Length: 139
Image (cartoon, rainbow, N blue to C red; front, side):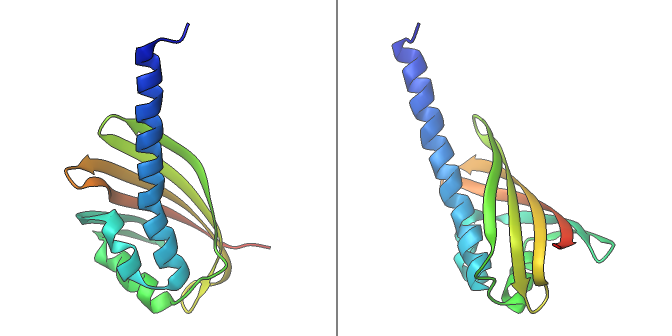
């Protein structure tokens, strides 16, 4: 039986879900354009980047991501797909699969799996950490 409270919970969930998708759109837009300025509004200033690049473990401030995006240049053909979004009140985890990365650093046809941890702040949802796995070029 649906109650007024269950409806409000669903509406609140959808509101939060849509707000989180909008935050991730900053990342997607910046990635496509090769312009980190477009993605910065989605990240908390103290966000981190974690993953393996060239066999080396990175655990760095988000500035390393911004530099990579700017140096890689545009990747206009990326195919981002939201694999999952998990929301628990003031925290969220988003799994984003991005295929067809290209650019000066990425090369072409690269697939990346990303996990984004988000925190709800007074300014709305912000990405606090980007974890990534580089699958490499697709056949």
